[in-house]
Amino acid sequence: MVVRIRLSRFGNKHQPFYNIIVAQARTARDAKPLEVIGTFNPVPQRPTNLSDEEARSARAFKEISLDRSRAKYWLGVGAQPSDSVWRLLGLAGLSQPKKQQPQN
Image (cartoon, rainbow, N blue to C red; front, side):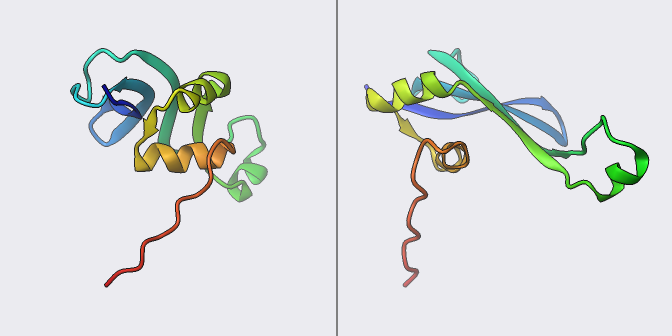
């Protein structure tokens, strides 16, 4: 069976929140995963511990938390990340960015 690292959506309407999970490729998106290895919040958040003036000039960020050792393990045993997870792993320094295929 093929094991995939992919996103599982949680959160309310217009407020997405994702768990980065390891699951069998044929299971449903919200089925029970083999393991949860991280979270991803795509809604940009502003830092909260700054003064008002600093907060206005501070750049919003998307929060990613990842258990790097478990992600390395699953990649080492052959788990295949989805395209969106591949990008997140690239930001964490665990994978090389994919090369873009030329459009015909």
